[in-house]
Image 1 (cartoon, rainbow, N blue to C red):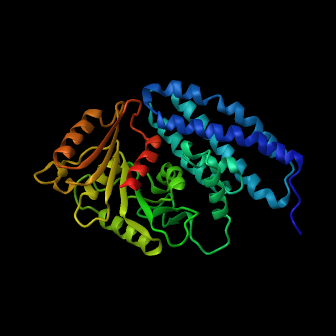
Image 2: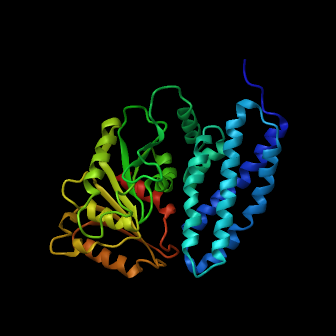
Image 3: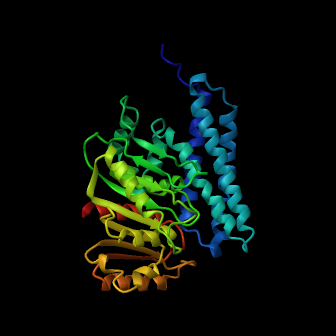
Length: 368
């Protein structure tokens, strides 16, 4: 016997909640992309109206009588909406304390958990599926239909978001995104994305998933063994582990060995260049964002492996941790070493994830 259709009250509650929820998440993503501590007050003003816009529809959804078979959907939406409201409140409160910018970053760190909780509903609600694509691809009806059909297929394919020993209280594991429409045979480009200092791969995966989901690319998001990558001197405890992770993914999924990108943010960017230019590593392309050239690479011959290497270097003119002058010096050094360099200096970028640049980086990777 088929399940009874949702009642009009449930349908109305869903239609009332999803638009403000996704609009709020879009605004959170915008705030994260434009996060610059001196602008925190303005960013909070842009985010604050989301609370009343979302709180009312959430109450209506909680008050509707849901059939038993839809309680998973109801509970998941309630959880996502509550987490989103908590994020907004934490960010607005932190913006009132301008001398303590760490609170802004703590608030936005919740964004990954919200996305992780919401993603299982992408095959259920088309607006959610569209939200998990980069903006240029959200109107692609054929892509959305293909993603839904693939996510709902009944086979043994291990696709979607997977984790290997990568709970948030663990170090040294990895999270993996495998495009749902993968046909079981076609080689896929692989993005290995390194989080920043004190970050976690399970969180950083979500910054890359929308662009990769639209283009059929694997994303491997490792977690460093220590609180950051091996850039502080001493033994490199991460390089061999990264190589082993790539090998384990390639043993299960066909990786396009001509398109294996190592990218990273902040400390992850610094290590992406250091590790990516190391002999014997499997990476063909490098794309560091908001990092610096490690001093070891500036020693005699340290940049020799950069000759002919495709490198996409991104930095923000507003970066307060690594001033843009460091990126300009890195550009000169890499060009001098003969790298095939794309240099992108973004006027409105501070020290944060340049999400809008990721589709361009993937297109660059896939074009050659």
